[in-house]
Image 1 (tube, rainbow, N blue to C red):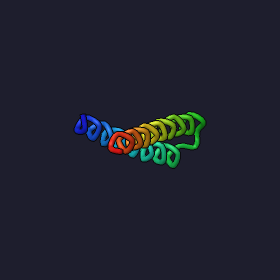
Image 2: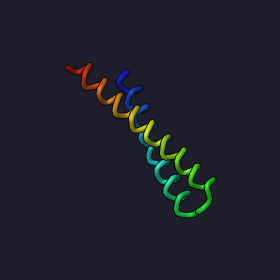
Image 3: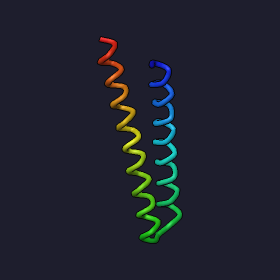
Image 4: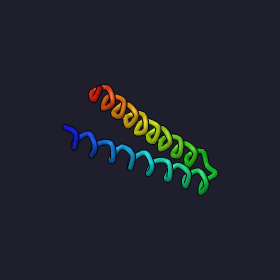
Length: 65
């Protein structure tokens, strides 16, 4: 179970980082409403991935105590 959580943590972190990078690039490269909406969606995806990562870390800490 520990290795599954570790793999999921790494995937969530990678998704979060990719979403943030994509959002920044979309925002910088586009002045259109569509570009800003795209950036907002990816920013939200990154925030969700980071929230999932934090929840998994909290659960792991709770289980080890």
